[in-house]
Image 1 (cartoon, rainbow, N blue to C red):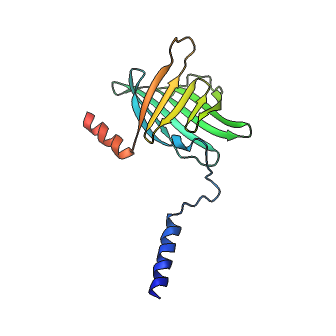
Image 2: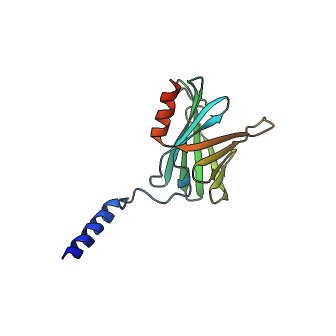
Image 3: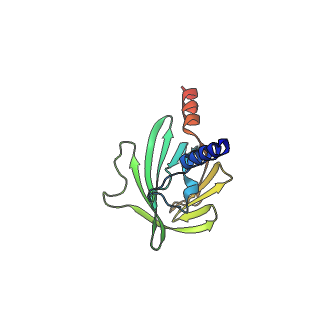
Length: 166
């Protein structure tokens, strides 16, 4: 009887630990991007945060700050579509006025470069180990691509880092 209770208890714990998808979460080819990434670049502090995939979509946000002032934001999605993954991106000034026209959005199909490396138009993402993300951005008219090096941080780590700066 005691062994049966132990088995039932373990089975209950396993059932509670098993994520329930209810059909809303699917494996996403770029789930390795999910997390909070921070680094230096573009003359300031850069942060890019990717939410875990829901359905066929991932959502990310990018922020550049210089001297603790926001310079610009990006809102980014990666959607799995019939013909492959597509990134859509919009830029916003610090006051949330868009760079692109109201109904315009940057759109790039994915080109797989490796297991944890992908190109979306002018942007390459490469996961290095578990906690480093290299992003290379090629801007038209610029002779050299911009290289951003991010490291994965938890929300608690980010909060401590901000408190130390004050």
